[in-house]
Image 1 (cartoon, one colour):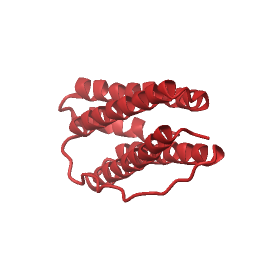
Image 2 (cartoon, helix red, strand yellow; image 1 turned 30 degrees about the vertical axis):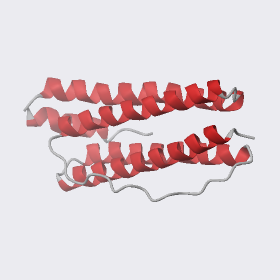
Image 3 (cartoon, one colour; image 1 turned 120 degrees about the vertical axis):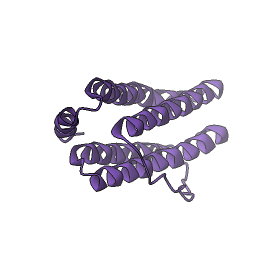
Length: 163
């Protein structure tokens, strides 16, 4: 059985992951509206990943005998600026998710909930990848600057993301 404090924190993390998914889907809609289909695709893949993260925690809770009751998901931002601004928001958001995962892990250690610690190790590794992915795009956008041809080339590269 999952300690109640850990269970409550895991349920809250599901909400955060679902909010992340909605945020990325909103960003995808923005990029579609400004004719950057590659960026839209990349954000949609982020949406799918975040939904998967929520389900991973959801399933874990049920495997350990807990029950999830979902709350409403906060409405995400809908208006965005340039791709660099959006990607900086992505990185900022991912860093906040990383902090949340680290807090969860610390709580699992405090509660001596070893199975949750092991499960959360996957998320810790995933967050390293998430932050690096956003940083890589940010660095490319900084190199491109105001060059439309560079943005078009990066947009095409973003469209090739498989997962």
